[in-house]
Length: 210
Image 1 (tube, rainbow, N blue to C red):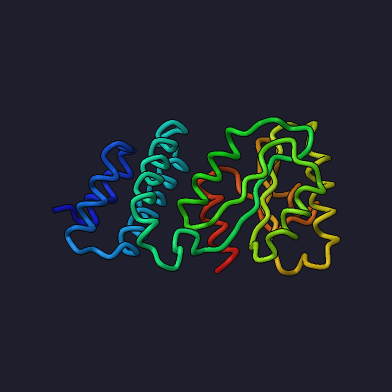
Image 2 (cartoon, rainbow, N blue to C red):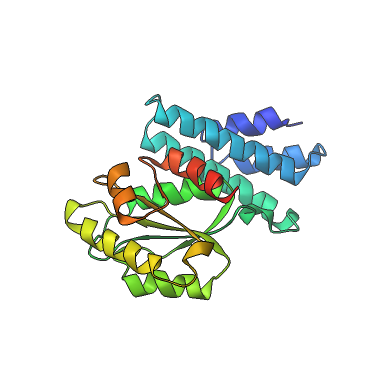
């Protein structure tokens, strides 16, 4: 019989192949799907903290996120309220002219594991696409924009400026990130939040909607 501690351990260890079996065992033992999900979210927070302290690196974080995803797949049919996206929707994309997606994808994995339903617009996303994505999903709580090159920082600034001019701006939070971005730059362009890595992005996203 699997316990919640077993579920947490398997996610932290990043054993994706074994995770569905352990989650199923926990269900068979009578544990509530919501409790199992929250245990996995907490386990990813532990992984995120270790990453922030440089105790583990991107590969370890990716395997843990993959293990969590496999576990969530087992729970999805049982979460009647669609509870996997219980924190709400977030739109994410890398700004126009920038083709980098590893950092963005890592942030998405962490944010999904914090309970968000992420709409991934991909890379090289024009301003209009960010705006239309929100209009198609007006219940979105956060828009995340990333730039990985100093040359695409102006595109990030223009994207945030366009979002800031929208009549719905007060209903959504804007998060920015990427290697060249700083808190000072985020403040100057009018973003609501900046984080320097994927783990803190998930934490910040939760704070923004709570």
